[in-house]
Image 1 (cartoon, rainbow, N blue to C red):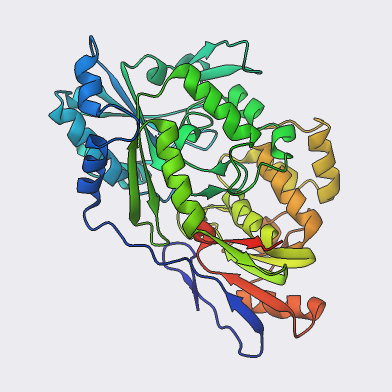
Image 2 (image 1 turned 180 degrees about the vertical axis):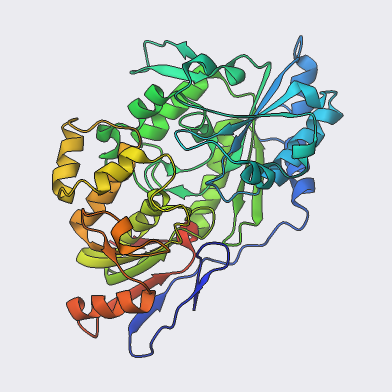
Amino acid sequence: MKLDYGKDGLEVTISPNWNTTVLRPQKQEVIANPIKAIRDAINNPIESSSLETIIKTRTTVKSVCVVASDQTRPVPTNLILEGVISELIDCGIQEKQIIILIATGLHRASRKEERARILGNIVNSDVSVVNHIATDHNSLVSLSNSKINGPISINKLYTESDLKILTGYVEPHFFFGFSGGNKSLVPGIAGAETILANHSAENIASPYARFGSYKMNPLSVKSAKIAKMIGVDFTVNVCINESHEITQVAAGNVNAVHKRLVDFQNTHVFKEIPKPYDIVICGNGGYPLDLNLYQAVKSMAIGEIAVKQGGTIISVNECREGVGLGQDKFKELIFSGKTPKEIYNKILRKEIVVPDQWEIQVLTRILMKAEVYLVSNMRKEEIGNIGLRYADTVENAIEQSLVKHGKDAKILVLPNGPQILPVINT
């Protein structure tokens, strides 16, 4: 059996003696000509005027900001951008008027080779490309709104542009409910203080801050309020399959587009299971989602859904960047020697307030429920000392888990990351 892992996948031998269930995503029809489909969607928008009409009715459009996903996302952004920019040029916009703003949130900036993957042929154009840097106060504009608690700062290239366009993809997210839509703004191009306030310990601890939950999710609700305040002129979002190919496209009003694709995800991604499993094997969907241990926490949250209390999660992620470049506070905490419960409670009491605290908060929550083995390129001494267990192969991790749970333990295998998510049938 092949699991998504890095760029090439990982072959795993599943013994016929193991009590194993494998859940694979539903087959989705791939769009044969995605750029044409993107352009068609732009010209047939949902609850919005067409891009051409929006441009024609503006007094002036001297600058256009197109927000794009960063290097940690598997979406074929190059295809989306090619479709969007082709439409903009056909509407009379020149390349030099367009800025691609890479929505890094609090992630590191994209590298040259990563930009080539994100941008495709646009690399050789006159379109400007800028990495959002959440800690660069000179690149941000601070705003105020009495109806929104906490600081509000957004990249000024976006706020000062005459035309504001979001791009991205929609799939279940482990605490935001779903990616895409307003998430491109907050956290995508927000200031660090805004991100930290939205991703507060209190919000992350909400029972609604989970995969597939967004209507009552405090993070997505606040993000939507900020987006409404700042403004989004047009949105192009897609859905992708396990091979990162485009299967759905929607364009137009940001909330209508998001709802359309969320509805699609709800009917194609979630799969009921009768009860929790003893052992759950899961990854993040391969490169670039499994670049590092920081990102790998998302796959552990998939396992958390399906594993029993006291069960075992086997997290299969390449982690070619180790813990994660730029994730110094995360690394510091996983090497703190504290128990998961101690770290988790300190975060809730606001004794630990650091960038990306939500990742360690979710990780420690999972470690309080189940033991977690990490199968990756990382060495044993690199995975910290707060409870993560090391295994050099998936097979060895299973064998060790069977010692704990018995030879008849029920094992669930999820080979394709968040492309399919188990739901307990209650």
